[in-house]
Image (tube, rainbow, N blue to C red; front, side):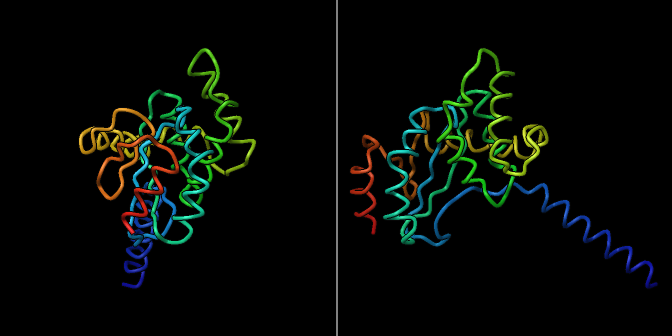
Length: 193
């Protein structure tokens, strides 16, 4: 009887670990219960998205995210196969997905170059290895669960929020329609506080 219970316990534990390993986590920054939630639909090969990360994000983080007012959820809206693979790599490691996103935007000119998708993938793999994020690149981009997760974000963006370009911000369920500057974003956020 003890042997049967032990076997069942091992099988249950193995199944729980398998589920946890295959679960894809949402990448976000800020407090879970923040008053304002921003969904940021973006593509990792989009130069306007990289500009958002360099020009707007630092002030947004300092003045709203770090103070607990805003939760920023990253949503995938890949515009091409290279962005799709980069998004899959970012979701591959639960603990530092936002770090990978910021790194890829900061270094976009290093890896978003080449004549073929093979060249772009090779650049992406090299740059990720150079930072040693501890991910298995090929395993990440071939992970069906992550692939489905990334595609579902894009489908939801189109169907639910009519997203057609990147970056697109959805603030507390409403599409941000103004010109995307920190000044405009700040005014909108302050009205919601």
